[in-house]
Length: 325
Image 1: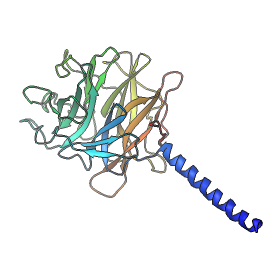
Image 2: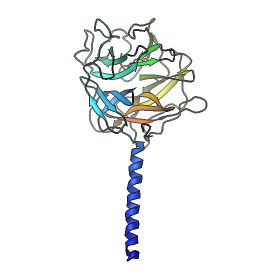
Image 3: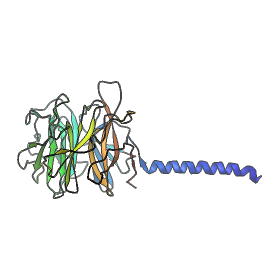
């Protein structure tokens, strides 16, 4: 009798162990895409043990941003902000483009500031909390950078960088017709909206759009996207400088993330970087290939690593071990 029962017990035990291992693996890994929705151009802030991801909604932006709240990068809660909206961020010089590409940072004064493109202009908002209420950070409710301020620059894709000394810098800029990308940069005063000097062009080689600045061991890494945002040529590169305002030289291993040979990763770009427990992570979007006149993009996360010489290594786009436990 025991001999007959033993194989059955062995099978049940094996099945239980297999299921447990599968569940443990699923819980210990964050896979790509991180959510089923279609978003692009992400930025991220952390408040306590909660992450807030702000992004463009697809296709090609909407009347407001996509905002996702998560603690584990597996379960997400969607929020609606009171600002920015297409209606509230329209000026006499605005173009038809919708709400795009936010950058949110917590400043030294404890307030949150958002820099976002609406109508091909850069707008600045302020809030005491990640979810608002938000309002225009300028008293006159005007754009921070008008469409007409720098005619050669497509004034989108703003990124705020706060240096280790607490000083803030703003980067932005793209090109028209998928060529001649320009990157503008300026130091901000303590109010986070006034320019401390004139904005200058700091465009590094290869650059087209989506600047994102990080600092590591005294070096400034200006990450960016190039190629066409609508197809497989879109990719991520970087340049390096000893100063937040350049000059910048092309980084090694470019592009650090591009379309894979099997198209599992297709047109990756417009990234942000954050650090948890000593590990850097890159949050970006990739294109979902489809035969449409527009693109749908998905949010992905991977580890960002450096070699001994301080060069950014090429990214293995496979997701990450769960760092939220």
